[in-house]
Length: 360
Image (cartoon, one colour):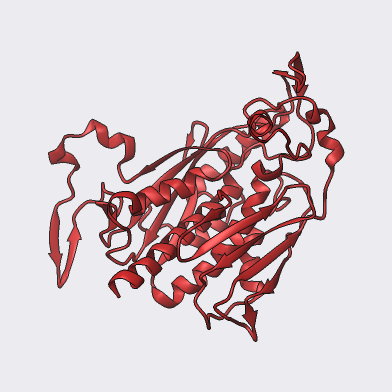
């Protein structure tokens, strides 16, 4: 079903935002990989709510528990189950939404499809579902580190509304990104972005933006022709995230303004290695990694739940108004960064295992 992702490294997430908890089951993890709850918790702490004064104040520690698949600090090769309990639930904040559909949210479409929905918090449509993805990706990163020790996955906030960061994707560091609560790679953009988020939140509104990502030291050969293209899988992975509305890799839409002579990436020999002198392909050609950095961008819309009155309809089909309540991000971008990294890691590991299975 649609709650699973991956072929050889396959994850299935479960849980609703205001249910008992959320989590993931991982199948296909190789055995004998060192793994502890602390390894997973590090990434969960980067996406949890309440970590700064520009994100949702929901008070969740998001402490993880490994229920299976690990013994004496190493993976067994059997399914790994990871659970995170929901502690700070306030279903009463959503009582009005039981009978009214939030504009641009999944309330109406879930009701239309299933005939029922978890109205208290958004259920599976909530970004809280991504806890399972981030937990699974922490495991994937451990496996990737054994296969490709030099591989590096980074993401950062490239823009919020009309504020654009200036970031060198080839040199930006994890420490620079994590040194600020916005998680942008441009120190000069930090305060303007913070000010914009706070001003927008004070108005009961929300803003969106773009997360950019780079993968360095990528091996050649990841990805498969036609339906198994690496960039196509990355696009699926990113567009499966809540609030995403766009994906582009390499030159993306800007490449349409160039001619073929301008856009092509010329090859040259760098010692014994085939390289390209430019990287408008974004590290992927014919759906297969070419060894250059993989670079892509993901567009996130403004948060759908806002604290101002909007026109909507009730579950009984009457025109009405709805003003959002509860605790929500005025901008999802800072907490989206580790989630983008997570889906990148899951995608790359699955393709790496597929490559090893087919080509050795």
